[in-house]
Image (cartoon, rainbow, N blue to C red; front, side, top):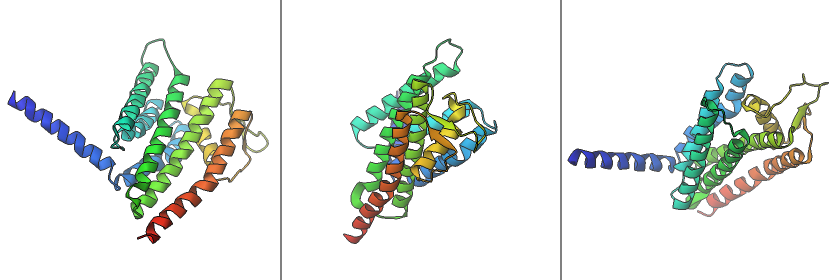
Length: 239
């Protein structure tokens, strides 16, 4: 009985320490490493077939899992836990031998999960009105999370309408997109191009929903740095 109580105390302490770590500014560095891998390295591995789709999904589940511990508000914790469990259940179904698959529902939950994760990281970024190197890293994290959100958005549009973006054959070798995991490299590329307002022109949105998403990302890409820099500078000058 005593050993069981001690184990429970140890488990509760471990959870508390894990939660405190993800509420600490240093966690921004770990998240940045994960996001750099997800946004810049993972697409290359997918494109050249050097990584199994099971591991690709594990990367996204890791990001969503950290979202559970990135807030001290009970409502947000319950919401992120619910979204994570839904994601986990849907992905287990996809990789199991059961003849059921809810890919669109899975991606919609992924979109909701990423939206909440961005909100949580924005709260962490501006809490206590502090300005330091870690907060700058946190601002970069939110920017990269917006790119992943855009990639999920283009994927959901494809699954709903049958298409979202298309490659211009005169510029790039036409690639048939299916809206599945294998297309993440193309979606994240176009999302980043839209977010940074570079606009190479090798891919283009082909329906009104994807066009509006591209415009939304471009607008966010322009306004986000200005707003964040102004807010952080305001914090630093007020002290």
